[in-house]
Amino acid sequence: MKKLFAPALSVIAITAMSCGGGATKETKGSTAVVDSAITAPAQISQAAVDTAAITSLSEADKAAGWELLFNGTNLDGWRGFKNKSIATWRAESGVLHCIGSEKDKSDKRGDLITNKEFENFELIADWKLTPQGNSGILYMVTEEFDAPYLSGPEYQIIDDNNFPEKLEDWQKTGANYAMNPPLVAASNPIGQWNTTKIIVNKSHVEHWLNGQKTAEYELGSEEWKKHKAEGKWKDAKGYGMSKKGHIALQDHGSEIWFKNVKIKELK
Image 1 (cartoon, rainbow, N blue to C red):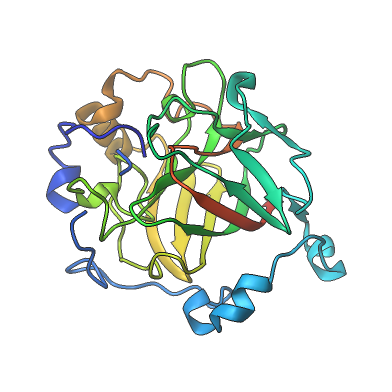
Image 2 (cartoon, one colour; image 1 turned 60 degrees about the horizontal axis):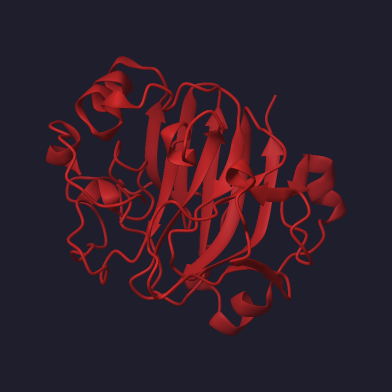
């Protein structure tokens, strides 16, 4: 999420900028959609999850087209957005760790982006967040503008229940940040691992969290254009316009850990 302010989302606000007000188990009136291909971390013992860092792919994964984005050892394949310092990012025993800051919670810090750009893909990553934390995964990011979120949509990651400022629904975990509120509240308690999946297939985009679909939208549709025109991104001419770009991990000053980050390009 970016710095908090109240965008005029007349449509979005009725139904649901990243950054709490208690998230319920499921948004009222929504229907949970479960992904049987993902086992939610809540169904696995915490000890097992904490030690299950993938640093190489199985032959089956390779055959299916998966590629590791984080090798578990160093930051090869990544760099800072616009080559900013990434001193806050560290590879530690198979885990990618953003150390955060006690004082600097701005959105102008050193976001991490992939060297490679992706167009149609399925991305999977495990993450856990510090209390009151705030971060995000962005995709189709370009470097034309001052920050990744001015081009790439954001999969929001935040402490829904304990964030120190009031959250609107469209600011909660799993949302298409400042555009689509999460369909369900699917995150595990803070300090536990979560599994995120993002699918971008041409204009069709899906967000998944711990096996449940949290957002679905069509880039460039009339509904999408309406949300953009009425909300935070109304003056961000490049937002959502690129069909290809970098994956970005946001450093918003909060401590966060990522592991098992892999991607499969779709034909």
